Amino acid sequence: MNIYFLGNNGNDEPLSKEKQRELALHLLDYALLCEFGVKRVQLGEIVKTGYGKPFFKDSHICFNYSHCKYGAACLVSESEVGIDIESVPTKAVKPSLIKRVCCDDELKIIKSDEDFIKIWVQKEAYSKFTGKGLGEGFKKTNTTTFPKEFVFKHNNLYIACYCELLSGGGEFTGATPRLVQAAPP
Image (cartoon, rainbow, N blue to C red; front, side, top):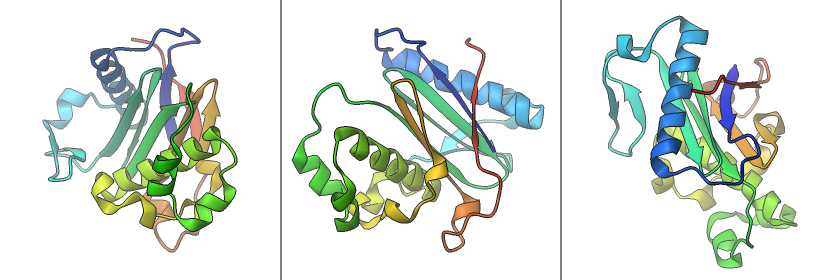
């Protein structure tokens, strides 16, 4: 499985929300062409579930994308996927947020804000995989059992993915995903 991503190449200027979305859609186009040889326009309208998970109305191809101030990432597959990308925090993460979203097992292993971001991206990717989003309750998801091969750091960005291959009891038997830096738009 390939994770397509683009960062802003060390540029410290954050991307606008509009640029973030443009970048994510560019990655979706790129990933669809690389993995399935199709263009987004061929797959029909993108609609969202009641929880906000995007999907192609008239296609079996599943996808998910994420963006942050400094980059974007995308996955495409024939089975459900979820992905998240976040930048390393530049200011301290509030302890109240950490306590609100982390379970006891996770609280034991958090030694830094970067540790928290690694947990956050895994929770976000999993919630996007299930399609229930934040409504599922982050605290209920224990990421200490997730394969660490699905969390990547590239420069100042953390990327995590979750796919159907992991959902059968947590044992992953497929190929480890790899990061693919896409061509810029």
